[in-house]
Length: 181
Image (tube, rainbow, N blue to C red):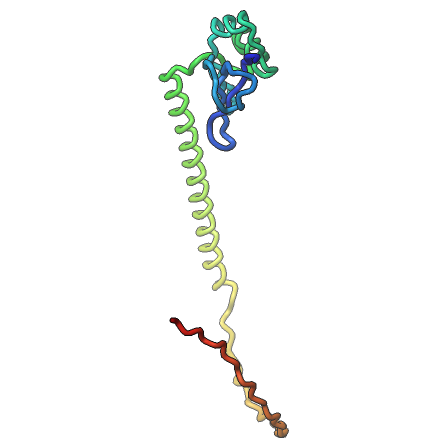
């Protein structure tokens, strides 16, 4: 059997992570494997690649065949990464700083949005107040003239007899009940 260096999918739905593994070609993609050489996280920005190049070289010397994707990832790792793929683990302090910065940016946006909403509400209230102050000034009190009531003649309504149709009752058949023994 031939040995392949390929990706093994992990992670949940639409949040894929891959392990770079050495496995028999007959083994299923996410099944049994011989050794893990590293991992690849394409969903991060930039994508993160951790790979032990010494182990990769050992397996290539033993005759392992790389998949196309693994071949491109190994080439990027040998070059030290590029704009789309970063090499190595993210420093924990750097990761916490990035998270704190992102959180602060999100909070600033929320505060700005809330301040804009409050300013808009204050402006609407001020406009409504001005409109209320101007409305009585424009309208002068008008005397109402008495309205005379005119009697309206009602047309007589004729009652039309309705014929009643006899309704036939249909007997309902009941299902026979089985007796228990």
